[in-house]
Image 1 (tube, one colour):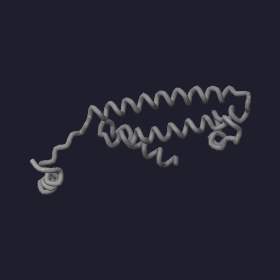
Image 2 (cartoon, helix red, strand yellow):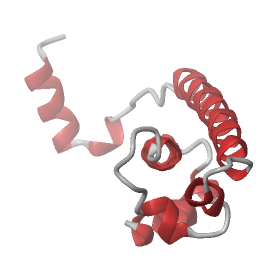
Image 3 (spheres, rainbow, N blue to C red):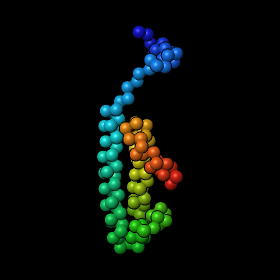
Image 4 (cartoon, helix red, strand yellow):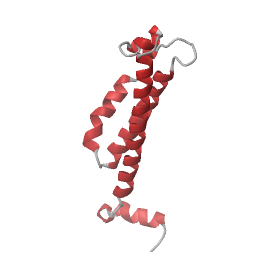
Length: 121
């Protein structure tokens, strides 16, 4: 048959010969794993937010209604846990949406969400 260079050259000259696997099953499995990870992170965030909301500390209690307080926590230990989880989730969501958009399995579900993530940075 020949090597990759020869085959690529042939496809370059005759693009209609190009047949590439889509790896749909592998892509779907990867998306499912990513979703499971996001569900886990979502539950962790809910637990952290609940603890902060009912904290005796005014600053932590204010996180539920003040993005400014949440995004600029005091330097005391443990005050940035919720923010760090939010940022971790944001990163994972971006990875999920980018992968999803490129996998063609659910492109229409993620494109607008990906745009909104980029706007919030």
